[in-house]
Image (cartoon, rainbow, N blue to C red; front, side, top):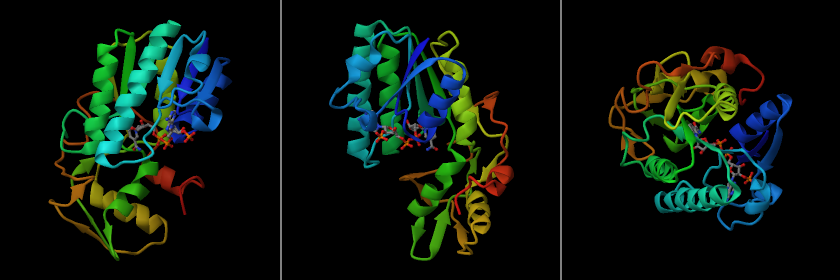
Length: 251
Ligand SMILES: NC(=O)c1ccc[n+]([C@@H]2O[C@H](COP(=O)([O-])OP(=O)(O)OC[C@H]3O[C@@H](n4cnc5c(N)ncnc54)[C@H](OP(=O)(O)O)[C@@H]3O)[C@@H](O)[C@H]2O)c1
C-alpha cells in the first residue's frame, strides 16, 4: 500500500516512516526538505499520485497565533484538495488532546481549524489526538522561564513518548478509517511543575520550579481537565522515568 507521510522528516514523521517501511509499505516522506510543500503546493500532486493513505504530521514553523492558524488552514486546504483529486481513501491527522477545550490558545485554535477542515472534506478520516510528547517538555520549560526562574502550573498532564504516538499512528494508518477521534496519552499523570522538576533534575539542572496556578501555558491558564484525555484513551507503554533514563533523552 502506498502511504504518504506529510511532515515525514519531523520527530513523529521520521519515526512513522521507518515503522511503515519496516512493515513493507511503499512510503513517501513528504516535506519541504524532500521537495513537497503543502503551502506552495510544490511536488504535492506528484507525491500523492497512487496513494491510498495520507498521514499529516506536519507542524508550523512558527507558533505565533496568526502564523500558526494560517499554516494549518492553508496546508490542510491544499492537502485535502490534492487528496480528493488523487482519490486518496483515508486521511489520518495528528492533533492535540484538549484542542476543543482551550480556544484561547492560538496553537490549539489552529489545530481545531485543521480538524474542522478534515471533517468537512468528505474524505474518510481518522484524527489521533495525542497528549504532549515527553520530548516537548524541554520547550514547555523554555517558554515558562524568566531569567533563572521556571514558573509552571501544577495542573495535571498525561504526557506520552513520541515513540508511542508514532506506533499508534502506524496502526491507524493501515486500519479502516474511524471517521472520528481517537485519543492517546502516556501511562501516568503528573502535575506539570513536578514533571519539569524531574526533567531538569535528570539533566543536572537545579533551577527551581515554582508552582503557580495562574502561570500560563502557551497563553492559557490550565486546570486538571485542560490537557488530560477523556475516559479510556489508548495508553502508551513507555514510562516517563524509563524515558528519562534512556540515552535518547536530551542531556
Ligand atoms: N509536540 C507535542 O507534544 C505534540 C502533541 C500532540 C500533537 N502534536 C502534533 O504533532 C505534529 C508533528 O509534530 P512534530 O513535533 O513531529 O513536528 P516537527 O518535528 O517540528 O516536524 C515538522 C514537520 O513538518 C514539516 N513541514 C513544515 N512545513 C511544511 C510544509 N509547508 N509542507 C510540508 N511539510 C512541512 C517539516 O518538514 P521539514 O523538515 O522539511 O522542514 C517536518 O517534517 C504536529 O501537527 C503537532 O501539532 C504535537
